[in-house]
Image 1 (tube, rainbow over the protein chains, first blue to last red):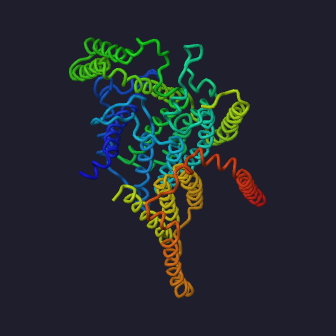
Image 2: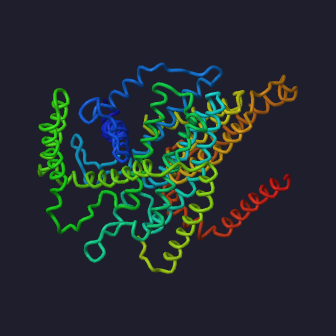
Length: 404
Length: 169
């Protein structure tokens, strides 16, 4: 106990990690529902439908199914590395989220004033890249250790893809770092405060729109998502680096992919879209009711849906969701909660928008061939992001922008 | 016992174990993984000294870039298990005593040098010099010429590798 009393930071960090992990796990589970539902509707299908109202219990059913499937290990595979690879992928993917600040407001946990971030590192951006750069190992080792030609080729392909696009990803971000003059996430967000002509927010996406496009394209490739989702090229490789994985080990790769999507969207939000900053001018004070109003509107729609369309168990279940949503709306009205919720609300909103773009591209664009993928990355994306960097540096050096 | 102290020992032991595994392991990929373990625990040790930037760069460059290429090559060549020979006679009779001698020499040097006493007194590296801004100012103003010269040297090495690779075709 004395040790804990001496290090209160440890306790607070631990609490934050547990809360973040819980929220993240929920988001990861429902991201799969979100994705399937949206792709289905874009392609004129229904998507998850039978388990729970609107298929809302589908992630739970999937999780149970993953847990109860037989866990196969191929013969003559490297057992240790075969088990290590999914752990590596998932742990690294989730660690990066510790660096993301979700809001500016100081909240108190057990009487401790603290920020809405687990680790406010001075060079957060570099740390994030350090952790994502190790993420390649999960894919490469999974492919190698499976002792299967498909897996090996898939692993090689995917890791080559990740290494190639990491270059463009990093270069496209340097422009933002140059303009802000810092690696710290909170400072990166705060440097985007203010408005052009008093109503257009000064977010970095304005001066760095090319950087943003390069970043997001590279990010889609980096996270192995459509149209760059070669590991899922079933016609060629059965399933890429995770061909031999089954049961919960496969689920871990699945979750790692979604966690990476979340991280990448969070990073784009912080770097280019003003993080937790509201898009509306501060003088519009009525905008702080927006979180409450959106939750209440959702609750109203769900109440209508429950009453009119749902029968039996689905009606009870959706009723619970309605009450939850209404409760959240009421919670956002509380004077103590209202200022705290603004930051996370806008952050989550922007992040959700980017996740929607992810799903949208997946359901719209066809997959690239491997050589097309490589030539796109090296011959187009890299030069463009390099030019963007050079232009930004030139702009900076000739003194057209003020430092900070 | 402070937290830094405990963490130092954890990462130091992991680093040494990783280095031992690197030599002992017979699968090339296990060796490569052990080396990554060493790199990462070294980065953690830098972090404990307050050198945040160096720690991040250590991971990005060594663990994230160089070792990925190592693993890549091992995977591509599908390198098999290393063959073991009997120990060479020189290694057996001269190497081991010399190694132990070197260890004692290093320990003696560290115990009596200024570095040793600074570490023992608990004074870490000066944190101001380790901050990213200070480091970059040092690198790009005071030591600009050596820095650029090193960059050109590395560029030449890359070009050399390309030329050698192309000559074979």
